[in-house]
Image (cartoon, rainbow, N blue to C red; front, side, top):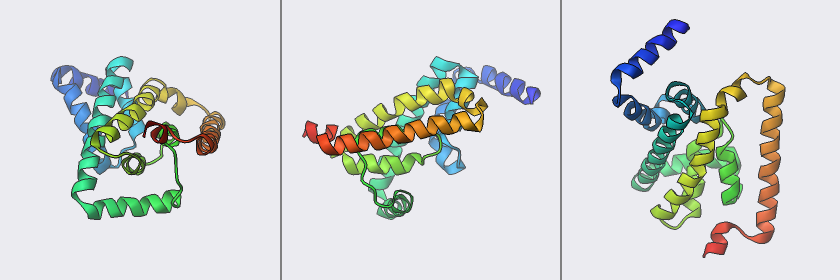
Length: 187
């Protein structure tokens, strides 16, 4: 394992300025390779350090969000397939913006299903990108900086953290239904 680690570090050192670009491209190719967001962000923190890994992950995920928006609007069949998957997973549950942001922090919730929610909530590309990027920052920081800690925790502690995020998700959903969502207040 240590020889693989050294080989990767040597490759990153050898490629120099190209390594961050390749890492950002990995974020764009991640859905095709069936890699979870958390895994790629953790790799960024491990190989590039906390700050650089976080910045590269934010850039990569933001570009991925823009590409997803373009694909969904360009290919209606793809949008229908993602919407069908969204109905299966979330059973036509209405969510607020803050709930989508919380779900983005959960390690294995499908990134593009949440992006589809954001597309449906926003009026245009600019609005979508604003909320999408805002929703990427905290998970990028969390997964890059603390992802390895979460992976080393026992299942009990990891389940407690996920349960607390779930409770926060439900609480905010109820509160925002009573008070109105940030998008409704903005309109």
